[in-house]
Image 1 (cartoon, one colour):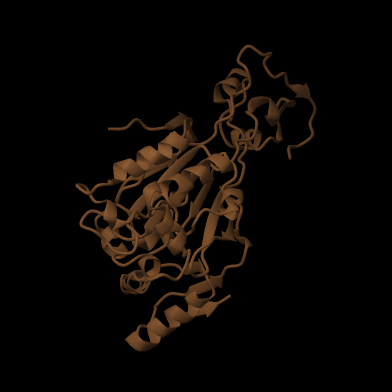
Image 2 (image 1 turned 180 degrees about the horizontal axis):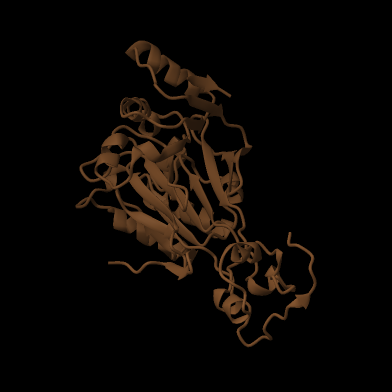
Length: 357
């Protein structure tokens, strides 16, 4: 049984440690067609503290992959489609229809190339399918496509045979960690005052002592950054989009030996993906979208693609179906324990249907 990450402070609970990370789960890692061990494209982002899933691409059979995982389609709130090739969209209509039949409790927003809305409307019309929940399709253009208090999503065009877009998901910077021990040592009573201090506010105790929240907090934590690039041949726009990311998920359809195929079909080799990661200065590279031609027993196998990429960018991983990767927070150090304890100041001042959009 896991330990409770909360500290009980007289009915007020304070969470300690990084209890929830951004989790990336691969539901499909094959290109073009499914294989016995790999479905076609589908990736799920599990957002911390939101009970919310974002789906990246939705190839045929994606809803079956959900059934084989511990992820719940009812938690999907946003779907991002890179391009209109079948191995990235043929599962979309079936997934949405099943979600509707299950009694979807909230709207879903879809983002993708301009033809996406017409595609879904045609599927509805010819299959006589009616959704019981609102679906809004947002045709994407380069730049910001979504923003709220916690996240910013941008996209950029890639280089493929049809219009394709890469996506950059940025978690906004957060206030630094709160030094709980320091607050207790200063005699500040547990409760809502701790929340005010964590927000950097000044609090006033009943006896008139005032404390500045900045004295109890680490510097702001830099938000995590994830970039998804597929389908594309090597291009400078992908490097720019991925600049400084914690994780770059990049297609690696072909081995370096088959580079001519990659250029002909506007896909990437394992070495192109690694060069993109190196040029963008990312922390980690995850390869996906592999041609079935590299099955075990063939002259070139997937492990050879991984070796090729690692020769250029050592921190490279190879995705497989149902594999999850967690992106930890970039934690800032707390104020030094050896520094002088915060001193209070005296005073009495109070603290501070398918629609197209």
